[in-house]
Length: 331
Image (tube, rainbow, N blue to C red; front, side):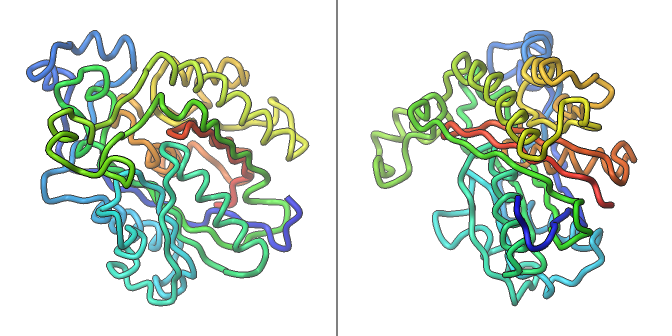
């Protein structure tokens, strides 16, 4: 990236609902078992929001924690980017709701709808605003309340997902540090493999769409799995190439937390040993756009990521999309 300014993460924060739902809990409502879910996904439990909790509520708390971690004031924020496929409502944007909640009076705000790749898209977008000198401080959040759009009678999807939010503050940093490169991509031809068919202008809400359960997540798991393995390797290699780095330069890998088999496959292909791959999938399930910032927040605050480490973030998501961000840690 030919940047005027280098851009790095100066603050991190996350938030999850209190309610823990285990695999055994799910076995009481759908035909599944703890062993079946663990073996195929690596998930043991997930957090599920109550009926009064919306995406903006989790975003707001994660944002406050990231702001505190960065030692800034909310009025210092120039732009708020929220990656989510479960906004509070179609409009106003969840980003505008969060702007109000945290008192970020000086910030522009908008949402990004890229599924699980959304947070990394947000990092790329936000970093460019800062790199060009347009803004100095950007808040990027990935947050989902996927439990509200899951079919709790479909064991192929309801066991996979959870709710949560992760946030970061982007600011200028020392030249040559922070975000080194990124790779974003999409394959719209394959978008039909992961959808929420109804609720938009193509298929507005009606008795028929509700009866046919079209407002829930629909996924072809086998096709998404195959796409994920290919896309994560491709995106990772492209980010390394753009930064003139090799696989040996990766100090730490934080992948999208969708399935332990996908994570293990990506780590093997990228030759990153397990002790340098962060996994919290077992505790939270797939939290879509929130999974990477939540994992990054945990890994950093456990002192697993050190200053000057080269960290690779990589994800795939609805669209179908993929994204990777390579950065040199500055905290």
